[in-house]
Length: 263
Image (cartoon, rainbow, N blue to C red; front, side, top):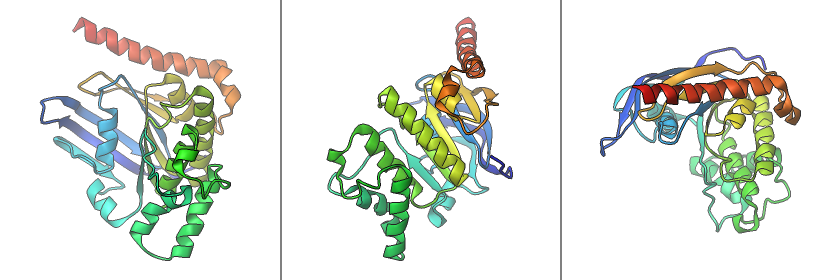
């Protein structure tokens, strides 16, 4: 995928301390270029989700700065649809149909109703739900509900997609299927993706780059460039080159834990 490289997100010396005294991030520096697929990989509590929430304007750094396309997240959210967030829970409204759930953020923006419906139908087709427009969340499997959540995020055509362990609760077959669909959407739409995961295999399969984070307080431990070709096919998971990157990422996590124990 050929993309003109420009900075999408920049964490500049970011630290985050909560009112409880917990330090989630400490001196976190990381630039993200437009069009990259970045996975944040690290142990629980290392600040991965905190970093994503700050990019979305759902929290502010205690010190340092987070910029998104050269703006503060708060300013960007006020004026554009450039950021979308997919959480681990699909968070669908049970009384609204699949189509109406996807339409909700578009309705809040106002504008032409026909165009918004067309946009919602298009993204639902993209995630394989064109035959379920009138279904309700209770009638869907976990994987299908997550597809609706992804479609809802894509409907406004964001430039930046934030995903906080969206596939963690799914069975492995569904998880791998959605990984393939996500990569297909990413390559077609040429958006930037920040993806939080605990799963080394998932991080390697999806990412152009992996940001490995240390245990709390979270710091950037290492950055791994995953030089595997796109599009990535299911058979790549058995390729020796794939196993090599899994080993590199796993070793990076293990080495940091060993260093921490000796301090």
